[in-house]
Image (tube, rainbow, N blue to C red; front, top):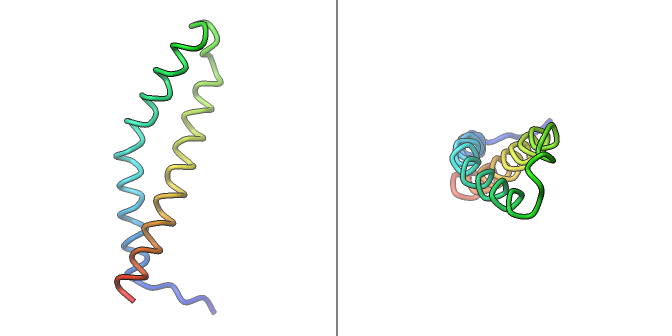
Length: 75
């Protein structure tokens, strides 16, 4: 049986909230970098895929980190 701590779940939830807060800043920085290094007509569907990938990575990292910190602090 898997032991899942309540403190870890709360930490994971807070991590997802942080991921949502950071997402806008990260995606803006990436889009500015892409705009400076690529032609504007190359931004089609791959930009939407990039946004999804950044959001998924962001949520996984922050939720995992939040769970770990919550488990360590809350026991």
